Length: 66
Image 1 (tube, one colour):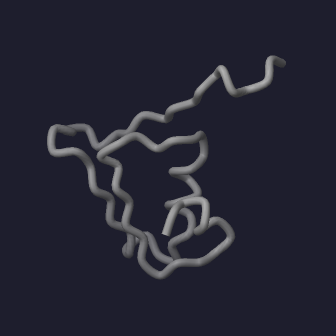
Image 2: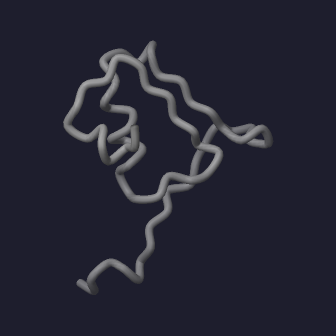
């Protein structure tokens, strides 16, 4: 299931593939917050990742100028 399809649902098990960065601001939060227990969350990081972080990518060109 995609992150967008999971929005608004409760999910028993969540698996995230973070070998590539999360596409939009807030998607990682949405993905993690859908799970009913933090003990049922599994995250896959790239093999070369030591610090277990992912980039938050925001495309400024698609945001309206404020």
